[in-house]
Every structure is written in C-alpha cells, then in structure tokens.
Amino acid sequence: MKRMLIAITPRFSINPLGMEVYQDLYTYFNLVRREDTLPVMMPICSEEEAAAAAELCTGLIITGGEDLDPAMYGEENTDCSLTDPRIDATDLYLYKAFRALGKPVLGICRGHQLIAVAEGGTLMQDIHKYNPSFHNHNQFKDPSIPVNGFLHDCTFVEGTRLYSVFGERAPVSSSHHQAVKKAPEGWTISAWSDDGLIEGMEKDNVIAVQWHPERVQQDERQRALGEMFLEDCRAYLRRP
Image (cartoon, rainbow, N blue to C red; front, side, top):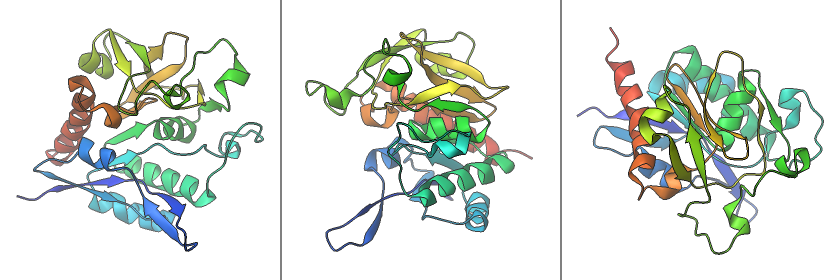
C-alpha cells in the first residue's frame, strides 16, 4: 500500500553539547499515524525546499511552539518570547506552499496563530495584558491538571466542520498566552472559549485550532479531528 506522507513542522532545542536538535512531540505523529499514512518531520527549510515538500507530501500539520515574531503582523514586540526566526520562516514557507497546491493543513496552537497571521490576521501578544478578564488558558499554571487533561470548554458554531466533530460544546487541552485578535478576512470562526477568545477557524480544507487535540487522544472527538484532516488528505488524492 502506498502511504500518504504527512509533513510535520520542525521545532528545535540545544543539547548539552551546544548542538541544535530537530524535534517534535510523538503525540503529533500519533494523531495522524495510520496504515495509509507516514508522518514525517520537516527540517528548517528554505522557500524552495518547502515547495518541494509540498509536492511530495499530501498534508501539513503546523504544530505548537513558541511565540511568533510580531513583526509578521506589523507590530513591535511587547510581550513575546521569540524563537529562532528560521522557525517562523519555515512554518510560513510550508504553509504557503501547501496552500498554493490546495493541500490540507491542520494548525495546532502556534499553528493556528501562524495561519491567522499568514492570511492577514493579527494576534494578542499576551491575552491577560490585552484583557485582564480573560481566563487562564495555560494548564501548566495549574499543577493539578495533567498534560493529557482538559483545562476549559469550547463552544462550537453550528454548521461548521468543527461543530460536526465536537457538537455544541467540548473540553479542550490548552497552554497558550497569546490568541488570534483579528481573524483573517473570508475565514469562518468555528469555535470560541467562554471568555471570548477565538479557538477555531476553518476555510476550504484548512482547519486551525488553538487547543492541543494531540495531547488528549483518549477522547474520541479529539482523535476524530485528526481523522477529519486525514479524510481531507484522502479526498485530495481522489481528485481527478
């Protein structure tokens, strides 16, 4: 059986020897690992290499990670902890390359924010400085909540693709201090937190969620989100 290659964006750290290590959490791979798929991590890459990856792979997952550089949406940095600019560039190159070919994309947490920015949206650099009334959206601040636990509920907009998976309400795993401030024009907002943050967006075969479905795969609906993305990939391959 020929397997679909699913590209996963890279993250990196510095090991004790001072060497850069490409990495990403195994849970992202498990979310889309099936008999007909092979998830593969991309390297930090150029625009040309991203285009080559989009030709080879059927779908793209843009994973969580550190803050985006606010310069990407026309702001000065006031509240961001920046990662290496090569990661910002790689995520953007990959997203644009897959979109140019009409291939499915799933954005998770930082990936959700990257998609919003790539399409002309903006971010709150820190949700609590933007509005102190926002709830805690980082479960790591509450030691009683495990990594594979739920922090808060989302409400889903009837008629959207996310609603078809989650219904009216569902709990989510969450760890972010930023959020989409202005959604891109022409995109459907499909999920909200109770305090009014945009938690999900969709357009065509692109889905972006602010939470972490890959952490809570014991939940049938979170696994179903991964399956919906894979069905989009399979549908792309069936195109005439």
